Image (cartoon, rainbow, N blue to C red; front, side, top):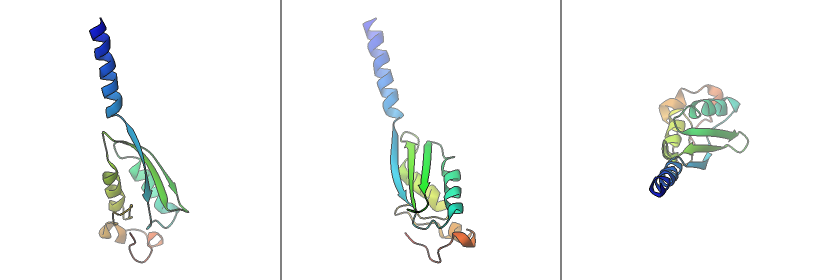
Length: 111
């Protein structure tokens, strides 16, 4: 009985470690308007492993909570880049940037 109990406890510990959440700030320097933040929120919140994303339009800063066993920060930054926006040190995809509405462009790409 002791062995079963210890086995269950170890299994629970392993499971809880593999499903740990992380939180990270993402600088969104090329984000211009509320439409930009809405697009980023909508698309990034649908990524597998993303728990929550909040964006402060004035600070051009996003905070993302995600499951580390499913997705990493670099993948989230790359997904934002593919939308046409810079994310931390990941530059915006130039083709996606050119496809943005004119109100969402800052003239030149900023990283």
